[in-house]
Length: 259
Image (cartoon, rainbow, N blue to C red):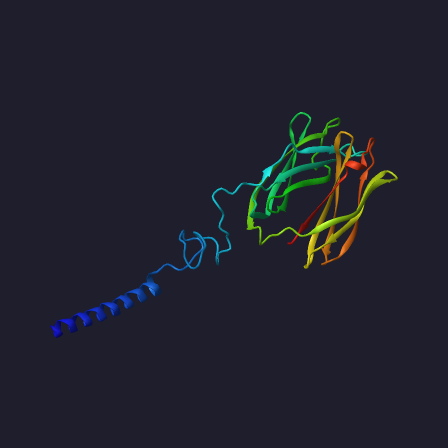
């Protein structure tokens, strides 16, 4: 009986050593190396090939795309018959995810509906944000026949690069001392952008929508670079004067980028 027990113990030890050797050989020579594209959840990933040490974050299956809101507007620039401003609006309905970047395209059409030109750009949008995209003064590179002009535009977005909202947070910025008036042949929107952040904000876009009594009539913008923590910086945005200007309807929008 003692001999049988001894054989069982030796057998178990032998199998344990053999198993350890086989496992070591598998780990060193056979097991596929870790990869963020091997279609497996391994090496501390939060999901399959995402999260953890993988740069690709894990997205929920029901994440909503960046969407277009309303119609894209075209404004003829006063005094420049071949130039126009373009204003579109996009929305990120996701409360916990921001798009660090996305591509957009404005397609410009003439009064016959013929495509004149496509303008490509890139922007970003924070979680649960509604944002305007604008091109203040577009002069098409193509030759437009006399008497023709572009009168409409369509906006499309693609290729969002998602990030968790906690990792791509909207800067705390405020507009102060805002005023609007006319100076010569121009309408001016003036004010101050204040940073309530504790870190540098590399770029701030100040976009202004000018309106008459019927609604938006023109758009313009300016940029502020490297806004320091607690700093306030003045801005002036000009637009050619037009009749029936309603300064009460002027909208000043600020978009701060952390990149």
